[in-house]
Structures are given as structure tokens and as C-alpha cells.
Length: 348
Ligand code: CP3
Image (cartoon, rainbow, N blue to C red; front, side):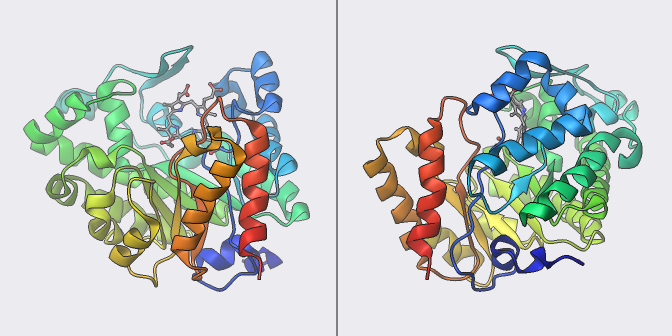
């Protein structure tokens, strides 16, 4: 890296180094809880924003302008790589994402392709380049991201969001050859996408395995871990640190450590100090306030933030975040107070 953002709080914490205060950013920090975002969304669909680098830059910067955040995350989504592989992607109002036709057997896997990211995801790579310029002036590092092979397989096979993950598990349990072929393709797509994002200027990349906690540790180990490892191995060629995030992962953190990433994100279903004991205190950790805590009255929210920070005991390598994405109904005032409080409380 050539710029002095190397010494920013966020990048230091990602490397496990001491910082002057705990860095904080919030998953889904650009989104509907902000009036600036809702206003722009009246004119443009979410896919328009993602596919127009100038708009993606504008939205990425909205929370950076409004709050004293220590990192920006490029405005994109985990699903466009599946569009690149040949599925049709739509965001339906009130229903969430829809992918068609869903991948249900070996012949559906045969039809998928693995184009290079410069071809199928050029818009996010361009958005990263543009946004980096604006962020350098503000001294804020940029995070790139991708869905992990399992979470992408889940959307491709279910055809959208899913509560019980029946189709993806049925596929995984019943169609061994097709599963491993699909996951192998996804590992290549995810790895090369992350590598390209690093080349475009992302300081750090994050892998979202949002739904992996739906699996037993044994299934994770056999059917998923080797492919996340492969994606990480390819992404490593980009030369930037890698964060892993998943929900409901308390029972598999030892396995997630085996992915080989640099930072592990955890949700609120496990105490931060317990999670840290499992992954080892030499591995930086990210988390883990319940996003719903932002709906509590300030004194109560403050107490909950303090609890997370006290569990970290000021050890180096803690990046404060929510345990999952910020919710659309979140009161904006509490976001501002949260960010400032994390800095004030940990400032030394
Ligand atoms: O963090 C950020 O600020 C960057 C932007 C970002 C978005 N999606 C924008 C978005 C990121 C990091 C994501 C990741 C993502 N997308 C995940 C992994 C993280 C997680 O929360 O587990 C997942 C599972 C998705 C898939 C997805 N995208 C769903 C299920 C939905 C619909 C949900 C809903 O609330 O309607 C989306 C749409 C989406 N992606 C929105 C945003 C801000 C909703 C806003 C809109 O319609 O304008």
C-alpha cells in the first residue's frame, strides 16, 4: 500500500496493532435508515445504484459524511456475482431478491459460467476506483466484499432468501457431485472477485457467509470450508487483509478460523470474550452489538455498547461493529451517538 491510510485506526486494528481508540464501522451502513439514501432510491433502483459507479460512490460516502466512521464499505450487494454466472437477479419490493431460474440439479450447474470479474462485475471495480479517490482525501479506508460460496449457493439454489434453507441443504445432502462442482465454481468467482477488488483499491475485503450458521459443524467442514479456503487462497493474491463474517457461528468458530482469514466477525449470540478465547487472542475480532439495541433508549444502548467494549478489555485487534446489518427502521441519532461513544469510551 502506498498511502498513509496504512496507519489508520481501522487498518491497524485489522493487523492486530494498538490503536488510539477502537475503530467502528457498521454493516449495511449505507441504507434505508438514512434519509439521504431513501431520497436517492426514489430516483434509482438498487441495481441502478450498484451498476452506476458515480451513484455507488455517492451512496458509499453518505454515512462517511454523516458519522465519524473508521471505514467505508463499497456500495454493492452480494448477489451480482450470481448474475454474472448466468442467473437473472431482481429485487422485488417487499419480497427481497429473486434469482431465476434456481439451480436445482447437475444440468443447472452445467449451464453456469465463471466469467472474469473485470467482465461481469466491472461496475463495482470502477466504483471502488472512484470512491478510493474521494476517501483518500477524507483519510478513510475502503472495504470491498463478496458473498461466500455457501451463502451464494444458498441464494442460487433457493432462488432467493429462505428461512429454513431446505433446498440448499437438500442439494448439499443429496447431490454430492453437483454440489462440489457448484461450490468449486463459486470459490473461483468469489476469490477472483475479491482479488480484483483489492487490485482496484479496496484496503480490506470481507467475505459475507451470512447464512452459514444454518449448517452443522460437520457439514460445514466437509461441504463448505474447503471452498471458503479456496476463495481465501485466491483472494490472498490481492495482498490485502481479509475479514470473515457469518451469523450464528458460535458452534463453528474453530472451523471458521481454518478458513485462513485475518479477522473474524461474530454476532451477538456469543459473548465477544468467549468468541475470542476460541479463535485465539492473536486473531483480530469484529463485532458484536445486536442491531436491535439501536432501538433502545440511549442510556440502555450505551450500557450495551459498554458491555461489548468491556469484554474486549481494550486488547488490540477489536473492530467494533454490529452483529449483523443495521436495520432500515434504526433511529439515526443513535447511530451517531454510538459511533462517538465507541471512540470516547476507548480513547486513551
Ligand atoms: O454495508 C453496506 O453499506 C454495503 C452495502 C451492502 C448491501 N448489501 C446493500 C443493500 C452489503 C454489504 C450487502 C450485503 C448483503 N446483501 C448480504 C450480506 C450481509 C447480510 O446482511 O447478511 C446479503 C444476505 C444480501 C442480500 C440482500 N440484498 C437482501 C436479502 C436484500 C433485501 C433485503 C431488504 O432489506 O430489502 C438486499 C438488498 C439490499 N442490499 C439493500 C441494501 C442497502 C436494501 C435496500 C434497498 O432496497 O434499497
